[in-house]
Length: 99
Image 1 (cartoon, rainbow, N blue to C red):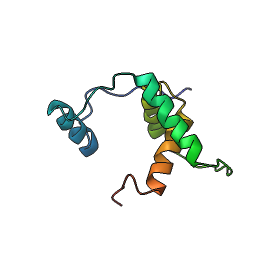
Image 2 (cartoon, rainbow, N blue to C red; image 1 turned 30 degrees about the horizontal axis):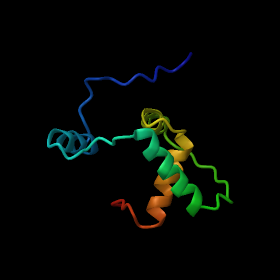
Image 3 (cartoon, rainbow, N blue to C red; image 1 turned 120 degrees about the vertical axis):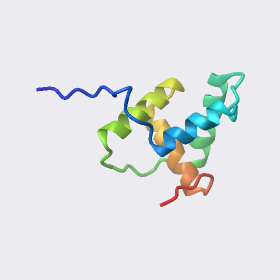
């Protein structure tokens, strides 16, 4: 039997989602004039800075992968590109993760 992966819209928000909602409500986000141009610019920056010479395999929770794919799709990019951008920015110290 196939598992149903629909998200319950009545599930309480987690801390990250609450913070995101607050930042949106406080107008901390700005629209990009030419979204496709920005995506191409960041994709090109990533390609210029990375050799892409190693392949890795990781296990990811299906719900996390579903969320990543949705975010990538809303930005008109492949989900692998989004993951690569996130890994690259973390490795270069441009984003920080509290562990």
